[in-house]
Picture 1: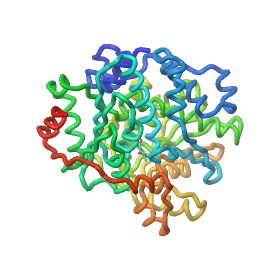
Picture 2 (picture 1 turned 60 degrees about the vertical axis):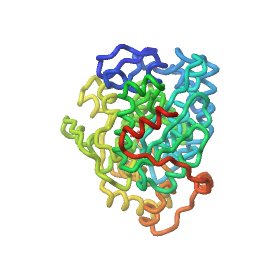
Picture 3 (picture 1 turned 45 degrees about the horizontal axis):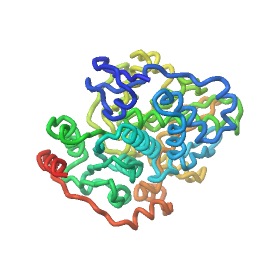
Picture 4 (picture 1 turned 120 degrees about the vertical axis):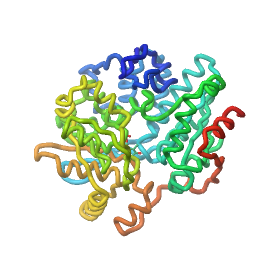
Length: 433
Ligand SMILES: *Cc1c(COP(=O)(O)O)cnc(C)c1O
């Protein structure tokens, strides 16, 4: 399969090139040249397939031309070693819990899949070491670091802002050791991102070492998220045969929902999508007005969605031929303030004994407000509420149990290297390695 750039100014790339480079040379995002629908037989037997086998069939449609079947099957099976259950919350509304992976966030699947696929390409080519640079405000760093942990031929550098990530988040990527190095930057998240960008643009550094990024612009990180949507549909069919769900996705950079839109192109019966935003509602405004006006992000309690210029918007536009009408026909939007998010968490806990995290709360509320009486909705619960323990406890007024997986990280010892926000120091450090 060849991958073209959404900016259309760069030559097409192979899967391997797209994964290793991340971004096309013209700064566009890679898109597969075709999206293969899955055969009717797949949809007929979907309820009988395991999550892993179903996901393998989906992965085969994307990557089957470029990765041998047994390798791809192994990658998918290794990636999905945990369940993603569909849980009934209130009449007509289900939560797809994406938080049962190693770091309790949905980004685990993309992180693990990308690590294994890149590991395969490195082994196959006998390549020199590849270095993954990732700037994080919390969740991405932990999912990527844990996904790549122990993968041979790859070293990961996680750059995070000193004092600005929660203790739980920090422990998830500073306690790992092995091929993971945490760099504690004396600055903000934007400073971390600027360091990574400068590194990718520095010719001397790139001649010295192979650098790549692992954020959701990478096809190997965002496409595997399509697995979730197929599995959600299959689980719903077991409970309510014949129903075409409305799927609601709490969205920030729009990687997750874009993977769902790809699923629909492959024939997955989804009635429509809802993208739920916090106050960073650039996409919501685009749906209303047809105008895309990125703006600086504002901080909210659903902080993984604090994005002022969603990087996967270019993919959504491309998928619908740049037609606002076509996008609005399949995707609607919603936007909520912190007060509304908190109110939803409190009310859902009290009425249904379901504990939402702030991101999932945007998704639940959009369905509760937007479903028609004849519709059934599924929202993606993107993180475990214990990852936002203090916020959640303050809102619901009772204690949140921390799962054993998180407690284990808390017992680890933090190891990180202090780093200034000046590029010269970061570069000297990388050159000296
Ligand atoms: C990353 C993240 C999101 C947003 O996902 P996108 O793919 O960037 O739209 C939502 N919720 C949580 C908990 C996240 O970590």
